[in-house]
Length: 207
Image (cartoon, rainbow, N blue to C red; front, side):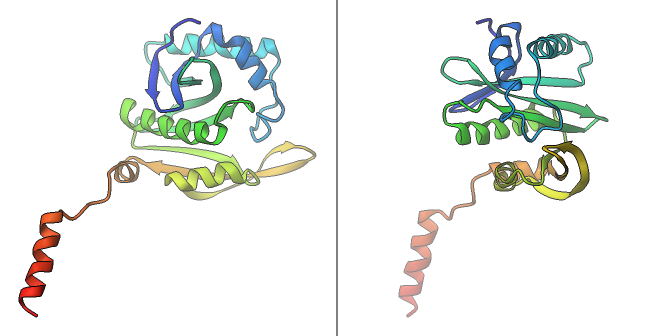
């Protein structure tokens, strides 16, 4: 498998550029109706998957890049297990979308949470953005719980965004600001043991 530029690495997965070598895994994943159930787009054919990867490779080579269609790969063997897209908006914001995980990926829930965290770090640290926003379908309870657990805040609702499975679906709107993300990365302040012991001793002396 060809080496691809990595944008972040965690315990289970890494965030990297897509390459033509990813085609088989990507076509299987993007063509899976279960994996793409909550996306606004329909499952892809193999030709559509090949075109998407070619577009991602061309975008990566653009001198003023505005679109990042990135792969999510297993940390140990670099095998593709997911993907996510980041579209820059203006100078300091981005729309994050098309988050997909292969249904047979190892440690699926942990991989998904870590991939979301790596995507946030990519937006705020590598791209230097102030804000990104994303959507999830209203009945996608797993994605909604994940976003809220990470600190991504729900901001609103888009009504009847797409027609799938015989009905219209609403999408929830979420966003995350860099200062809020940064504050959640810092460990909570801890009182020094020496100060705690001194306080306890003073109380005993003045009883």
